[in-house]
Structure formats: structure tokens, C-alpha cells
Image (tube, rainbow, N blue to C red; front, side):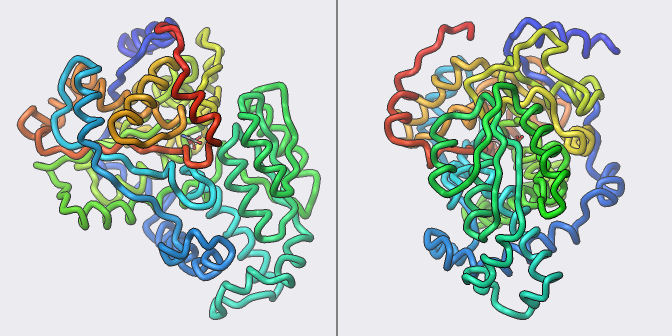
Length: 444
Ligand SMILES: *Cc1c(COP(=O)(O)O)cnc(C)c1O
């Protein structure tokens, strides 16, 4: 292990807020060919087409998707007041313009999981219905919203292990399609997420252990049942595809808002990472569209930087935060994954620009700051991403990344920063109020 990785590990072990530049980053032209073998343009196009086929069903079953024609998509909003406050608070500057991608407000599941999780359930339902002769690709998929189809899919089970939000997205969509659903929830999962799922008729099994255990047990129980399908967050390609579709949609929104992305107008994206699937899929999609003009950074809690460890040590899914003296415990339930995805840590090895770690106390500070400046409230896990723009230009590591990639101060003035808000709209009112009043000691 080289000196820089040693220094990183020392910093991580101490639970300090890290700004890391990925030494394995490569120009996209050099890795595109290899990437294509794993997830191709055609795969992403097919995922987009599948979501379009299901749009008529979603319009019927989830009327809140009618406004977007049955597509589950979130707004992109400039947040200038937050940008100013964040710069002031972090004691520096954030050159360029800051936007919020509000997946916190995605229909149906209120989190980024409404992309990957729902996509994988729809794909599974389609495969079963096609194989069972219940639908043809030419028919309107409104047919999925019928008692006959629900009775057919009711012969099958969908299972998933989750810290909360993935369970919500899989649970809500599977239940709407008629599947039996079992969600294996880790100890980190918030009570309200379990309550909400149970209210939809979803079977929730609770574990006193962490996320890896919930996934392992869910996978085991599902594998023992030939009618059961397991959504495997630790290595799922369909989940990844559902997330990757976000890129093309974002490109449309950027164009609509007159935002250019090229060498003189870089795009910097900051996304919170749990197991890595959501940030990986979104980033991968963006790299395919914008190549070296987009710079993707992940954000993780100081006690649970599993994706960063998996990539930096090249131990991939074998990396576990506990092997580095960390607890894996965090208020950011959506990010509480002690080991990362095997597939995502590999595919992102040469694509990721860098990563940030953030203390739990800061999550609430950012949550309050966003609320005060923009009147928006998102969940604590989501707030991890604000550490990106706050630290990028202040910390030597990431500032050097910028300078090495031609992102001089002058170019950065033309930059677009996107903080990916990954969840929040389903948080119950009394818990929102409690979040605004949560103050943790500064060193937590
Ligand atoms: C799941 C989740 C993430 C991260 O997604 P992974 O695929 O686990 O990396 C980030 N934020 C929130 C709110 C989430 O629910």
C-alpha cells in the first residue's frame, strides 16, 4: 500500500472529515470500452424504454406521477441562498453555481431508491408477465393495474434487505403490483419507515444486526423459495440501470435551464453513498454523457466510509469499516452500510473523482442551513452531499484535483455544482421538526 493510501487510512481511522482525490481516476476515453462490457449504452436505453412502457401503469396506480406522464423524475433547482450560506459557514468560497437535484421529492418512494428499486421490481414483473403470457410488449401496461394481473403476480414473492429507503421503494411498488413482499430491515432502519411499510401490507422482518446481516438473511430465505426474487443491493445490475437513467433526464433539465457542460463549464456532482449503487449508477450515466467534463464525488459518514475504503484499498466488497476501527454507526440511516457493493466499487474505480467524509453533527447543521435559506427539508443522509461543495475548494487534496484537471479558479467560476438530495419527502411532520432541533456534539 502506498504512502497516500496509508495517510488516508490514518485519517479515516481517526474519524476525521476526509477530502480524498482518487489516484486511480482515468480519462473516460481509456475506460469506456471496458465499461461497455459491463453496462452498455444499449442497456441504459433499454432501461429507459422499459420505464416508458410502464408509464401508463404508474399514471393509473400512482396518480402523483400524472404530472410527469408516468415518469418518476425530480426537479433540479438553483439554491443560491444556500450556496452563499454554505460558503460563509465553511469559511471559504464556492466558485460557480450550486443546484439541488431533488430526488428527495421523487414520487412514490420519496428517495433516490424510486429510481433503482422501482425499476428492478418493474423489470421482474414484466419478465414474469411476458413469460406467463399475461401481456405482450405491444399492449398498454395499464394492464398491470388490474385484479387479474395482481392475482397472477401474487403467486410470487419479492424480498430485499434494507436500511430503510430501498425497502420503502421495493415494498410500495411490489405491493401495488400484487406481489407478496418481505423486507429485511437492519437495526439502523427508522421506525417510521417500518410502520409505513406495514401499513401497505408489507411483511417487515427486523434484525438487531447491521445491513450486511439483513441482506445475507434475506438472500438466504429468498434463495430457499423458487417463487421468490431477491433484490440484491450489494451487486444488482438492474438497480444500477434504474439509477443510470437519471443522467439523460438531468441532461435535459440542464439544457432547459441553459446550463452548458463542456471543458470551460465543468459539472461537479456530489452524491451520498451507502452501498454505492445509487451514486454509482447516477455517476456512471453522467460519465457516459459528459465524459471528463463531469466530476463525480461521493459523500459518506466519518464512521461508515465503506465505498471510499472499498475503492481506495481495492478490497472492494471485502472492505468493512469495522476493520479500520470504525463503528459503522451513523444518524444517516441510508448510508449505514459497513461493506460496499462488489460491482460498483469495481466499475467506479477509474471513474470516481474523489470522496468526502462528514460528521453526523454536520448533517443536521446542513439540514438546518438548507431549511433556513431555501425552505427545503431533506433527510439527514441526503445532507452528507453538502460536504462536497463546502470542502472541495478549501481542502488541499480536492483543490489539487481541480487544478490538475484544468479547473482553475477562472474555470470554476463557470462551474455547475449539483448536490444530489437523495431522500426526504416521506419523513413524517413530527420527525422533521425533531430533525431541525437535533444538535449533536461537534466531534460526532
Ligand atoms: C440509499 C440511499 C443513499 C445511497 O444509495 P446506495 O445505493 O446505498 O449507495 C443515499 N441517500 C439516501 C437517502 C438513501 O436512501
